[in-house]
Length: 147
Image (cartoon, rainbow, N blue to C red; front, side):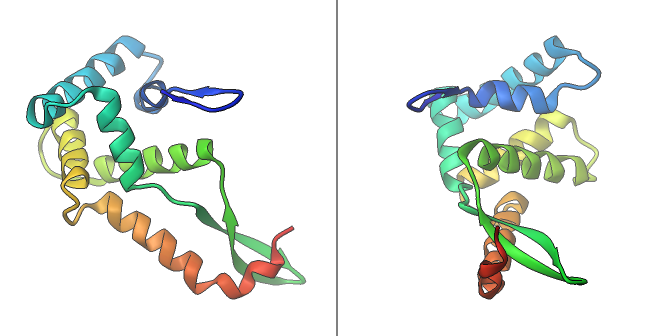
């Protein structure tokens, strides 16, 4: 749980909300608890420590958006809020897990992605972060198109 001046952001609940399918919160909660039980068994750290470390590794500060000006499209980097960062990180994680075509369970795929990210090996989620940052860096000359 991250506490700011005016609001509290519960990272566990955000992950839970993204995993929920067809409104089955109990199933999603059981999946998430299995995932963090396996990670907790290996790293011997509390769940919130692991979540904060995961967010620290994948933290980004800019996002690129397409802006249309006079029939031309420009890719423009924008700074983003903490809520948007958490959303993008969870979105990337689920994108990687759902595109993994191995014949293993969702829990194993999710745990494997988190595990690779914690070890800072070549994980697909980390590659998405690097791609986002390189795209923002390459298009920094278009920054004056922000409104």
